[in-house]
Length: 290
Image 1 (cartoon, rainbow, N blue to C red):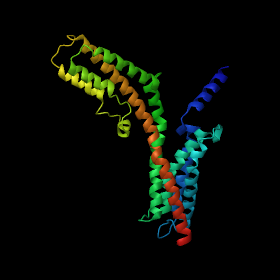
Image 2: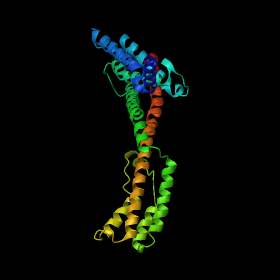
Image 3: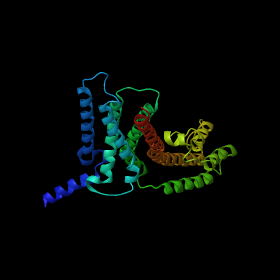
Image 4: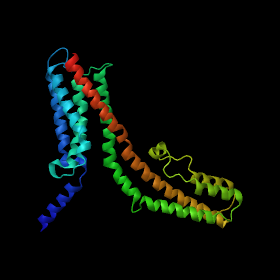
């Protein structure tokens, strides 16, 4: 019985391990072995000038790199098919990350550290940009979903919107006893609520023009010399505004995390297609024009 429990626990651990740890870092070790072999072969070659793209070593490294780039670019198709085991989507993603990183070594050795203003260096630069954006994507999907879950808790986006609408209704009612200037400040908060903001707002989480925060600051400035508790209506409005600001902050953190999970794809995917085009031009120029 105890043995069955231990086996079940191990099965659960395997089931819930992240894609970077898949198979006890199987693809990390494969990528490290590939990089070590490539570096060792480069160092052991005793020739001048040093090996680069036009040598036998360069052709081998270039072929490996080109095949890896094409295979890695197929992940967008592969992720639409759900399988399990060694060829599961999680295992494929783990290979995608670690073999993608190995391209930094393979591509650099293929070039023999020789760069210039040409299509070959363009392909190398695009490859580096794809890898860097992919590194951010790996970080995003390894870390941000947990932050998203912790921030959201049991609350849905619809519930946040309903809470904000309810607080706006309470604010309009609570602001009725206030004078005209104070009521206008509160009205600004209820009529100009912007939850998502611009792309820069969403990515940074900064909302300097937030009408609710401005209302809180303005009311605090107007009544800085007024003792707390001397105006029940004002105290109620202040409490409601702060509750609304807390709800907005939580909703905006949720939007920020989701934006970070998505924005890198707007760089990674288009640059991958540009890389494939540059790689094709690189190969054609090498075999047909050199």
